[in-house]
Amino acid sequence: MELNERADIDTGSIEDGRGSGGGGGIGGLPIGGGGLAGVVVTLIIALVGGYFGINTMGGGGGESTGQPITQCSTGAEQLQQLVCRNGLYVTSIQAYWRDELPQAFGEQYVPAKTHLFEGSVNTACGAADSGVGPFYCPADDKVYIDLSFYQVLSRQLGAPGEFAQPYVLAHEYGHHIQDVLGTEAEMRRRQERDPDSANQESVKLELQADCYAGAWANAAANTTDKDGDKIFTSLTGTDIQEGIQAAGQIGDDTLQQRGGGRVDPEQFTHGTSEQRQHWFRVGYESGDPKQCDTFKAGAVT
Image 1 (cartoon, rainbow, N blue to C red):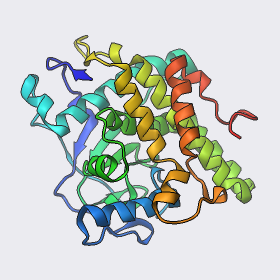
Image 2: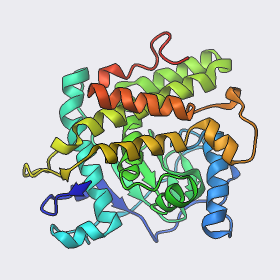
Image 3: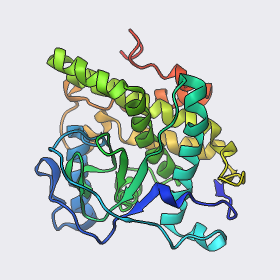
Image 4: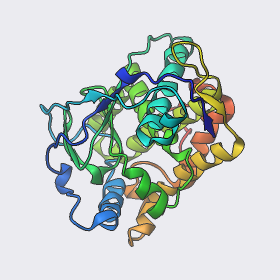
Protein backbone atom coordinates (compact mmCIF):
# COMPACT_ATOMS: atom_id res chain seq x y z
CA MET A 1 0.00 0.00 0.00
CA GLU A 2 1.37 3.39 -1.01
CA LEU A 3 -0.14 6.80 -0.41
CA ASN A 4 0.26 9.72 -2.77
CA GLU A 5 2.58 12.34 -1.27
CA ARG A 6 0.85 15.01 -3.36
CA ALA A 7 -2.61 14.24 -1.99
CA ASP A 8 -4.20 16.83 0.26
CA ILE A 9 -5.70 15.90 3.60
CA ASP A 10 -9.15 17.24 4.34
CA THR A 11 -7.92 18.75 7.61
CA GLY A 12 -11.43 19.87 8.50
CA SER A 13 -12.32 16.19 8.92
CA ILE A 14 -9.73 15.60 11.64
CA GLU A 15 -10.09 17.05 15.12
CA ASP A 16 -6.96 16.77 17.26
CA GLY A 17 -7.86 16.66 20.92
CA ARG A 18 -4.69 15.00 22.14
CA GLY A 19 -3.32 16.50 25.28
CA SER A 20 -6.60 18.24 26.11
CA GLY A 21 -7.63 15.71 28.77
CA GLY A 22 -11.10 14.27 29.11
CA GLY A 23 -13.50 12.28 31.17
CA GLY A 24 -13.22 9.05 33.10
CA GLY A 25 -13.72 5.54 31.90
CA ILE A 26 -16.96 4.46 30.31
CA GLY A 27 -18.73 1.59 31.97
CA GLY A 28 -16.10 1.44 34.70
CA LEU A 29 -13.29 0.48 32.33
CA PRO A 30 -10.25 2.56 33.27
CA ILE A 31 -7.01 2.09 31.42
CA GLY A 32 -5.01 1.37 34.54
CA GLY A 33 -1.29 1.74 34.96
CA GLY A 34 -0.08 -1.38 33.22
CA GLY A 35 1.11 0.27 30.01
CA LEU A 36 0.33 -1.50 26.74
CA ALA A 37 -0.31 -4.80 28.49
CA GLY A 38 -2.81 -3.11 30.79
CA VAL A 39 -4.53 -1.46 27.85
CA VAL A 40 -4.89 -4.72 25.94
CA VAL A 41 -6.47 -6.52 28.90
CA THR A 42 -8.97 -3.70 29.34
CA LEU A 43 -9.54 -3.52 25.60
CA ILE A 44 -10.35 -7.20 25.34
CA ILE A 45 -12.90 -6.82 28.12
CA ALA A 46 -14.39 -3.82 26.34
CA LEU A 47 -14.50 -5.54 22.97
CA VAL A 48 -16.15 -8.64 24.39
CA GLY A 49 -18.54 -6.37 26.29
CA GLY A 50 -19.63 -4.73 23.07
CA TYR A 51 -18.23 -1.21 23.32
CA PHE A 52 -15.94 -1.21 20.30
CA GLY A 53 -17.80 -0.03 17.23
CA ILE A 54 -20.73 2.23 18.02
CA ASN A 55 -21.27 3.87 21.37
CA THR A 56 -24.61 5.16 22.60
CA MET A 57 -24.16 4.26 26.25
CA GLY A 58 -22.80 6.07 29.27
CA GLY A 59 -25.01 9.16 29.23
CA GLY A 60 -24.34 12.31 27.29
CA GLY A 61 -23.93 16.02 27.54
CA GLY A 62 -20.14 15.97 27.16
CA GLU A 63 -18.30 17.74 24.42
CA SER A 64 -15.08 16.86 22.65
CA THR A 65 -12.91 19.76 21.58
CA GLY A 66 -9.86 19.92 19.40
CA GLN A 67 -8.11 21.69 16.57
CA PRO A 68 -7.64 20.74 12.92
CA ILE A 69 -4.34 18.98 12.35
CA THR A 70 -1.75 21.48 11.12
CA GLN A 71 1.47 19.46 10.93
CA CYS A 72 0.59 17.80 7.63
CA SER A 73 1.54 19.44 4.35
CA THR A 74 1.84 17.64 1.06
CA GLY A 75 5.13 15.88 0.49
CA ALA A 76 7.00 12.75 1.43
CA GLU A 77 7.49 13.90 5.02
CA GLN A 78 3.80 13.79 5.86
CA LEU A 79 3.62 10.15 4.85
CA GLN A 80 6.03 9.31 7.66
CA GLN A 81 3.66 10.66 10.29
CA LEU A 82 0.92 8.41 11.67
CA VAL A 83 -1.47 11.32 12.15
CA CYS A 84 -1.07 12.44 8.55
CA ARG A 85 -1.47 8.95 7.12
CA ASN A 86 -4.68 8.54 9.08
CA GLY A 87 -5.80 11.92 7.82
CA LEU A 88 -5.44 10.62 4.27
CA TYR A 89 -7.36 7.47 5.16
CA VAL A 90 -10.25 9.56 6.49
CA THR A 91 -10.13 11.79 3.42
CA SER A 92 -10.41 8.71 1.19
CA ILE A 93 -13.25 7.16 3.17
CA GLN A 94 -15.31 10.33 3.16
CA ALA A 95 -14.60 10.99 -0.52
CA TYR A 96 -15.95 7.51 -1.29
CA TRP A 97 -19.17 7.96 0.66
CA ARG A 98 -19.70 11.48 -0.65
CA ASP A 99 -20.07 9.95 -4.11
CA GLU A 100 -21.44 6.51 -3.27
CA LEU A 101 -24.19 7.27 -0.76
CA PRO A 102 -26.35 9.27 -3.21
CA GLN A 103 -25.81 6.69 -5.94
CA ALA A 104 -26.49 3.63 -3.80
CA PHE A 105 -29.13 4.90 -1.39
CA GLY A 106 -30.36 8.23 -2.73
CA GLU A 107 -29.15 10.09 0.36
CA GLN A 108 -26.72 12.97 0.59
CA TYR A 109 -23.62 12.29 2.61
CA VAL A 110 -23.21 14.26 5.83
CA PRO A 111 -19.49 14.55 6.75
CA ALA A 112 -18.32 13.24 10.11
CA LYS A 113 -15.19 14.26 11.96
CA THR A 114 -12.57 11.93 13.39
CA HIS A 115 -11.52 13.04 16.86
CA LEU A 116 -8.05 12.01 18.01
CA PHE A 117 -7.54 11.69 21.75
CA GLU A 118 -5.06 10.35 24.24
CA GLY A 119 -6.10 8.50 27.36
CA SER A 120 -9.65 9.75 27.80
CA VAL A 121 -12.24 11.95 26.16
CA ASN A 122 -15.65 13.52 26.75
CA THR A 123 -18.24 12.88 24.05
CA ALA A 124 -21.92 13.49 23.49
CA CYS A 125 -22.34 9.76 24.17
CA GLY A 126 -20.57 10.01 27.53
CA ALA A 127 -17.00 9.77 28.80
CA ALA A 128 -14.66 7.17 27.33
CA ASP A 129 -11.05 6.11 27.60
CA SER A 130 -8.58 4.28 25.41
CA GLY A 131 -9.68 0.96 26.86
CA VAL A 132 -12.89 0.97 24.84
CA GLY A 133 -11.09 1.04 21.51
CA PRO A 134 -12.21 3.16 18.53
CA PHE A 135 -15.91 4.00 18.39
CA TYR A 136 -18.51 6.13 16.64
CA CYS A 137 -20.84 8.40 18.61
CA PRO A 138 -24.12 9.05 16.74
CA ALA A 139 -25.02 11.89 19.12
CA ASP A 140 -22.23 14.11 17.79
CA ASP A 141 -21.41 12.39 14.48
CA LYS A 142 -17.78 11.75 15.33
CA VAL A 143 -15.40 8.83 15.12
CA TYR A 144 -13.15 8.63 18.19
CA ILE A 145 -9.76 6.96 18.27
CA ASP A 146 -6.65 6.92 20.40
CA LEU A 147 -3.94 6.11 17.86
CA SER A 148 -2.20 3.90 20.41
CA PHE A 149 -4.93 1.37 19.55
CA TYR A 150 -2.94 0.46 16.47
CA GLN A 151 -0.09 -0.75 18.69
CA VAL A 152 -2.52 -3.00 20.54
CA LEU A 153 -3.99 -4.22 17.25
CA SER A 154 -0.56 -5.04 15.88
CA ARG A 155 1.39 -6.30 18.87
CA GLN A 156 -1.31 -7.89 21.01
CA LEU A 157 -4.28 -8.75 18.79
CA GLY A 158 -2.32 -10.17 15.87
CA ALA A 159 -3.15 -7.70 13.09
CA PRO A 160 0.14 -5.97 12.24
CA GLY A 161 -0.58 -5.04 8.63
CA GLU A 162 -0.75 -1.35 7.76
CA PHE A 163 -4.10 -1.70 5.97
CA ALA A 164 -5.60 -2.75 9.30
CA GLN A 165 -5.59 0.95 10.18
CA PRO A 166 -7.86 2.22 7.39
CA TYR A 167 -10.03 -0.88 7.88
CA VAL A 168 -10.69 0.21 11.47
CA LEU A 169 -11.58 3.74 10.38
CA ALA A 170 -13.72 2.53 7.48
CA HIS A 171 -15.64 0.27 9.89
CA GLU A 172 -16.36 3.24 12.17
CA TYR A 173 -17.47 5.36 9.24
CA GLY A 174 -19.71 2.46 8.31
CA HIS A 175 -21.51 3.19 11.57
CA HIS A 176 -21.85 6.80 10.48
CA ILE A 177 -23.51 5.63 7.28
CA GLN A 178 -25.92 3.57 9.39
CA ASP A 179 -26.70 6.69 11.39
CA VAL A 180 -27.31 8.78 8.26
CA LEU A 181 -29.58 6.09 6.77
CA GLY A 182 -31.49 5.52 10.03
CA THR A 183 -30.33 1.91 10.27
CA GLU A 184 -28.85 2.33 13.73
CA ALA A 185 -31.98 4.02 15.11
CA GLU A 186 -34.23 1.29 13.71
CA MET A 187 -31.96 -1.36 15.21
CA ARG A 188 -32.29 0.29 18.63
CA ARG A 189 -36.07 0.26 18.31
CA ARG A 190 -36.02 -3.47 17.56
CA GLN A 191 -33.82 -4.05 20.60
CA GLU A 192 -36.30 -2.16 22.76
CA ARG A 193 -39.23 -4.16 21.40
CA ASP A 194 -37.43 -7.47 21.89
CA PRO A 195 -34.65 -7.21 24.50
CA ASP A 196 -33.79 -10.88 24.05
CA SER A 197 -32.64 -10.13 20.52
CA ALA A 198 -30.41 -7.20 21.53
CA ASN A 199 -27.12 -9.00 20.97
CA GLN A 200 -28.24 -10.52 17.68
CA GLU A 201 -29.26 -7.09 16.41
CA SER A 202 -25.92 -5.66 17.50
CA VAL A 203 -24.07 -8.38 15.57
CA LYS A 204 -25.98 -7.50 12.40
CA LEU A 205 -25.10 -3.82 12.82
CA GLU A 206 -21.41 -4.56 13.28
CA LEU A 207 -21.23 -6.98 10.37
CA GLN A 208 -22.87 -4.44 8.11
CA ALA A 209 -20.22 -1.89 9.13
CA ASP A 210 -17.57 -4.46 8.17
CA CYS A 211 -19.26 -4.90 4.81
CA TYR A 212 -19.35 -1.15 4.23
CA ALA A 213 -15.63 -1.07 5.04
CA GLY A 214 -15.10 -3.71 2.36
CA ALA A 215 -17.09 -1.71 -0.18
CA TRP A 216 -14.85 1.30 0.49
CA ALA A 217 -11.75 -0.89 0.15
CA ASN A 218 -12.93 -1.97 -3.30
CA ALA A 219 -12.97 1.66 -4.46
CA ALA A 220 -10.15 3.06 -2.31
CA ALA A 221 -7.53 3.05 -5.06
CA ASN A 222 -9.72 5.41 -7.12
CA THR A 223 -10.60 7.90 -4.39
CA THR A 224 -9.25 11.42 -4.86
CA ASP A 225 -8.67 14.58 -2.86
CA LYS A 226 -10.39 17.90 -3.53
CA ASP A 227 -8.03 18.61 -6.44
CA GLY A 228 -8.63 15.27 -8.11
CA ASP A 229 -5.30 13.71 -7.08
CA LYS A 230 -5.51 10.04 -6.19
CA ILE A 231 -5.01 9.34 -2.49
CA PHE A 232 -3.56 5.86 -2.98
CA THR A 233 -0.92 5.20 -5.60
CA SER A 234 -1.07 1.45 -5.05
CA LEU A 235 -3.30 -0.98 -3.21
CA THR A 236 -2.66 -4.69 -3.53
CA GLY A 237 -4.35 -7.95 -2.68
CA THR A 238 -1.90 -8.29 0.20
CA ASP A 239 -3.20 -5.01 1.63
CA ILE A 240 -6.77 -6.23 1.44
CA GLN A 241 -5.77 -9.45 3.14
CA GLU A 242 -4.39 -7.37 6.01
CA GLY A 243 -7.82 -5.82 6.43
CA ILE A 244 -9.45 -9.24 6.39
CA GLN A 245 -6.94 -10.48 8.96
CA ALA A 246 -7.74 -7.53 11.23
CA ALA A 247 -11.46 -8.29 10.97
CA GLY A 248 -10.76 -11.88 12.01
CA GLN A 249 -8.63 -10.91 14.99
CA ILE A 250 -11.44 -8.91 16.60
CA GLY A 251 -14.21 -11.46 16.22
CA ASP A 252 -16.15 -12.19 19.41
CA ASP A 253 -15.06 -15.82 19.58
CA THR A 254 -11.39 -14.99 19.09
CA LEU A 255 -11.50 -12.23 21.70
CA GLN A 256 -13.30 -14.41 24.22
CA GLN A 257 -10.61 -17.05 23.81
CA ARG A 258 -7.86 -14.45 24.06
CA GLY A 259 -9.47 -13.10 27.23
CA GLY A 260 -9.22 -16.50 28.84
CA GLY A 261 -12.91 -17.30 28.87
CA ARG A 262 -15.04 -19.87 27.11
CA VAL A 263 -16.69 -19.09 23.80
CA ASP A 264 -20.27 -18.08 24.56
CA PRO A 265 -22.31 -17.25 21.43
CA GLU A 266 -25.09 -15.73 23.52
CA GLN A 267 -22.68 -12.95 24.49
CA PHE A 268 -21.62 -12.14 20.93
CA THR A 269 -22.21 -8.50 19.98
CA HIS A 270 -19.95 -8.08 16.93
CA GLY A 271 -19.90 -11.46 15.22
CA THR A 272 -17.44 -14.31 14.96
CA SER A 273 -14.12 -13.96 13.21
CA GLU A 274 -15.48 -15.95 10.28
CA GLN A 275 -18.56 -13.73 10.01
CA ARG A 276 -16.57 -10.52 10.17
CA GLN A 277 -14.20 -11.68 7.46
CA HIS A 278 -17.10 -12.95 5.34
CA TRP A 279 -18.97 -9.66 5.38
CA PHE A 280 -15.85 -7.62 4.67
CA ARG A 281 -15.34 -9.84 1.63
CA VAL A 282 -18.98 -9.36 0.56
CA GLY A 283 -18.45 -5.61 0.49
CA TYR A 284 -15.05 -5.83 -1.16
CA GLU A 285 -15.87 -8.39 -3.82
CA SER A 286 -19.18 -6.80 -4.80
CA GLY A 287 -18.06 -3.18 -4.43
CA ASP A 288 -21.71 -2.49 -3.76
CA PRO A 289 -22.89 -1.31 -0.34
CA LYS A 290 -26.43 -2.36 -1.24
CA GLN A 291 -25.20 -5.95 -0.88
CA CYS A 292 -24.50 -5.28 2.82
CA ASP A 293 -28.04 -5.94 4.07
CA THR A 294 -27.18 -8.02 7.11
CA PHE A 295 -30.66 -7.36 8.48
CA LYS A 296 -32.33 -9.29 5.65
CA ALA A 297 -33.95 -12.49 6.85
CA GLY A 298 -31.42 -15.31 6.86
CA ALA A 299 -28.44 -13.11 6.00
CA VAL A 300 -26.73 -13.72 9.34
CA THR A 301 -27.07 -17.15 10.86
